[in-house]
Length: 537
Image (cartoon, rainbow, N blue to C red; front, side, top):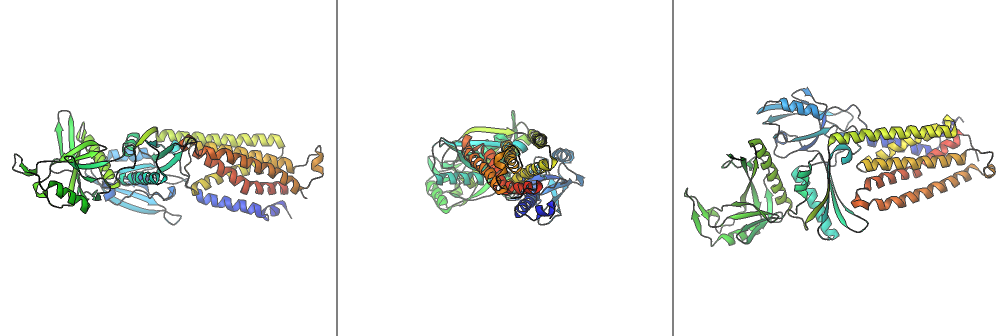
């Protein structure tokens, strides 16, 4: 039987091949993908009203909707998209054409008609279209990472409430591509790590760093709280947006724009408000409008954000539908509208999600621009290529036989893809620490392959080898390999918790790599070497 037939008749090699094929499907390379991917579609924006939607967090990167044309002008990069948007006329209707891979090999095309008031109202956040299902961490794609710590130690139940609340806040606010997880260091300190791709630092800190305690008071009596007493918060254009009675007004130092949106109270809080107001006096303003003597004061994290007059018609009446208002300021109307929208979205988010069980302190923030992340990725790829070439060079010098060097290099390259494929299946973000883990895993893999190769090959000066079979030599080699494997795992497990979990990517990719090697690639490599050097028991 020829060596090729022997290779393809061995079940260990077939396990290796099948896993490798599954890896390629999991990674799902699309090197020629067109357009730019949709990251976020803000609710109530013109893009949202036209039918565009934020991607589902469970969607794989290559199935996300991609914008390929705006007004029939092709866009293949974020810069091209921004240039096209800048050139559009305000208060016009534009055509956005998208593609999306659903269940087949070919993408489906869609067209949306969007009312383009201005670029700030478009409500679209985009990024370079992914060319594979490998999830890139913030180090490689840009974004913001915030590490928070509870002011006091919380129970597991409260920690789950905090995580669920923060995830809901992020979803309500309209942010996607996020990671929210708890972490502990080796001293037992508790942390919460939030990673948001494509978001600026101040936006994330303002949304997550506060407890989010919303309270409405009349005098010293609480009428309702955010979350538990709110059954509905309007976020559609029909009942939220710029207050038509106030609008935007210019002042000597800038512009102020007022927002208003409707909410529905629970029956209990509406009855509480009726009880508080039933004995209040009625006052009249200069226009003859009647109001109760006290206002309803709105507090966010114990800071007064607004006071609303209460119409006399609400005196002692159980009313569940009321309006909430506030304002935004800026140097010009556009800046004031942007500040108003941000403030309104934040207040709506807090009203929907409620407050956190405990106050959180921001202890660390990292922000990385997409351009710098792209540079890191290019450098990481270059390091990987140079490392592989260096190993190839050393192996060829060591054994001086191409038939020995080729299997080693083939397995090294396939191990990189296996690690990436498993990480894609587990939806594990690949960051710079993860790339370092891949390099470590490949380094240990090369060591293992050299141990196996040295044990298999003949050595006339080694008396022990003359009297041992192939199986005995393989057992000896794998004893060393397994011992090294468990030593590596023992070293990586503590790293998953060290540094508030920020080294988790390094530990996870290393564990994936060495586990793939011991159970898939090393047995296949041993069989390859046995056949190629024609070693028999």
